[in-house]
Image (cartoon, rainbow, N blue to C red; front, side, top):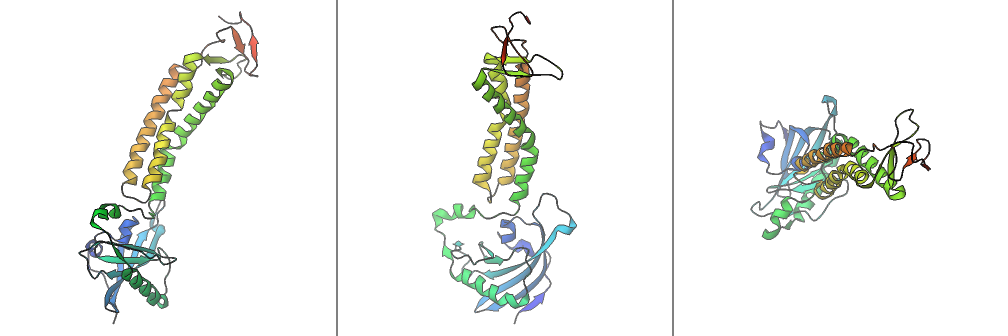
Length: 282
């Protein structure tokens, strides 16, 4: 007969790679346990309190999930799941099968159904060949913590560098279209212009943060749901910020500063139409 008990201290530490670790739930705490036997399989229903996976959390963001756990009959082997019940998440580590409806209320009358699903997941496990075990250990899994890591990366390394390279691309477009770029100060009638090598260095230097964003996009695509996403995004963020600062410094050394184009043409601040005025400015 199943009975509800209070979890001992450090209860969660007995599990090797549990589902709450795979999902990277914040501050997990075992509240209660229901233990018993089902068709010869030892099971545990764990009431787990954890934090929601958003960028900014507080005490009110705590959630509770029920984790249905069954011990593997042969923990000496490595296993993978082959069946995924609808509406739940499942995982298997070196000793147990886990099933949960994350952060959803689960009435007692539904426990039997979820235990049956957990048992079916257990009985449909497939053994992982020895040469694939390392890859299976790092297999992708939906990670509720990834959303805030990505959001943090976008805020810190995405916004200002993104504005910088978008401005750089607009200058590249102007160079391809007309062969020069212009800058106008408030109230100025004639533009400061850039052309030739200096103008291209200016425009391309502003585009440098785009390389960091491409790298960050690859990291998110490749490693979302895997171990190491956080530190990889941190490295990509530092790289992006370095490219943004370095590109801005280089660009400022080659900023448009000429009063006219090489042939003496001056550019109005009110129109992109060149004005032939050779003697307007030295």
